Image 1 (cartoon, rainbow, N blue to C red):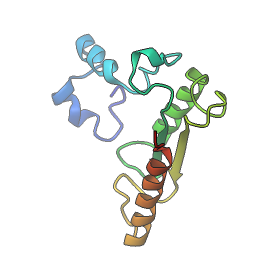
Image 2: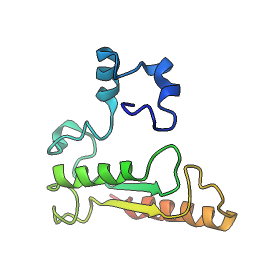
Image 3: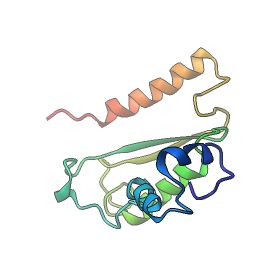
Image 4: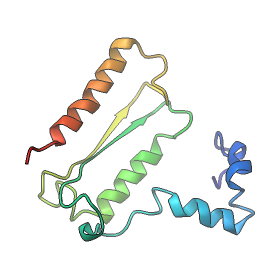
Length: 135
């Protein structure tokens, strides 16, 4: 939101305000910005995930709405700041942080055939199923 040359930035100023000109808008946007709100260490006492939480992050090189480097930066910061929680640094294989980057698709998987979309969905569902552990 600070770079007016990025797609969709100026279009959203009427909804959220311009953070470069309005300190209140800057504070509001930064309060929910995923990258800026990663704590240095996860306190499992304050969240319901307990000690089992995995994340699958997807990115696309041709995404017009979310540049591919945003998910990459987010994952890098998560791994750096919460290394005691996510595998491999934590040694706990129950907590995975996986990044999958597609070199060809865009924001909506555009230009992809039906078979490729089904493969992507199957990958995501396989990840979810692999994380479910019976009690």
